[in-house]
Length: 123
Image (cartoon, rainbow, N blue to C red; front, side, top):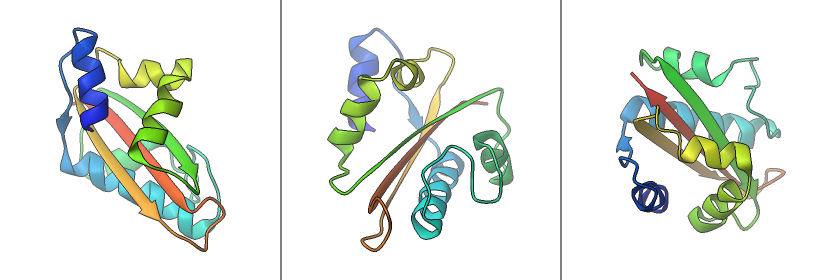
């Protein structure tokens, strides 16, 4: 989160507030991908990011998600990849998002091993 907020501040944007329900949704999606062997914004149950956030009891007006996976997944590698992708960078720097939750799962026996999910929202 520090990498993301530092970049937001350098662009004149308000830093994200950490939000527990968003973190739970992010962690749950990372776990789902790791345990069920897939990499997608759609959950193994067909859920969207909005549905996963709502299931955590969060009422949102804006919601988005970035995902990243790889054997050498680190906060820096995820951040760098997202910043080099126009769509993912747009989520990181979207002025309408005010809160964030990040979930990371390291599952050595899974296809990609390390899974990051960042969920962005505005109540």
